[in-house]
Amino acid sequence: MNPTGYTLDFVIPHGPTGPTGAAGIDGATGPAPTLAIGTVTTGAPGTNASVSINPI
Image (cartoon, rainbow, N blue to C red; front, side, top):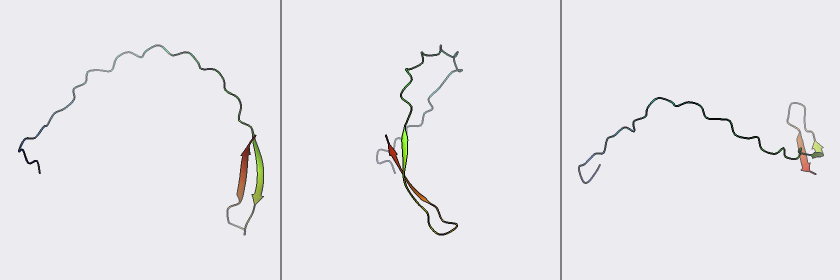
């Protein structure tokens, strides 16, 4: 309950959507990710395997 007895009830108005702006420039291409598969551990049939992945 509001102890002052006042209630603020409002709507933020908005107009129609404006035109689409120009596309920005492309960023530089980053390095390709390189990964190495480490240990692969399997369990009983029907269970998930566990894999360690190491960045190079």
